[in-house]
Image: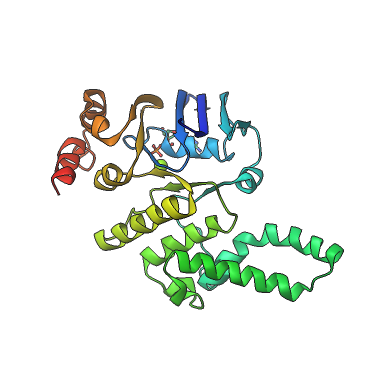
Length: 272
Ligand code: ADP
Ligand code: MG
């Protein structure tokens, strides 16, 4: 039986006169990779910002495990189990990889710290457990060798992984990645997606992926939601999405060299 972890129900969001989202609905199945695609400016990032509480929608509902999220603050939604990364990296450059992950867990630690005064284990233990947890995360992302290196010195692909590590610090049930492979070379991009797939399969973390790279989208998604001009235009499995005339038209309609190729690129990726 299908098990929906997240329901987006009839969401609308305006910016002044711009209807960034108009009545968008979709559903995300637990334990899957679900991509949200659409031409530039179609509303993908806005939808993520609504799901994660950064924007309040004019109307509609977001249900996470059946519980309403709309109107809740971003840090509350993050604590409830929806983690995210941003389109632009938000790391502390002078800190090490490990410190960046620990800082992201800090809120949780402060609560534990309060608990510690009540239950009286030492603060050292809490620091130790934060370090241990960061180490597990770094290992899972296959970047434990970089734990003590300042992130400014690290390659772009590794920095992207550290940002995912920060989101994992709060034990998310859903991980939302906004264009995670943008700017990566093919090897880095392949490596990141392999690791994401492991997180989904082994840690049972549902992943919502916003991505321009159609090869990545078609190869890794279980299901795809397509939006164009703030409206839902299609939802389905990769095979159906790439041959959907409405989707192809939406990409062709943008007249952008980079996004024209949904058909060609996806045809190619199936052959490859
Ligand atoms: P995508 O991520 O699909 O490229 P966005 O969600 O960023 O698209 O943008 C959708 C539309 O909403 C665009 O027209 C964009 O200019 C507008 N928009 C997004 N964020 C804001 C904002 N904070 N203020 C005003 N307009 C915005
Ligand atoms: Mg965007």
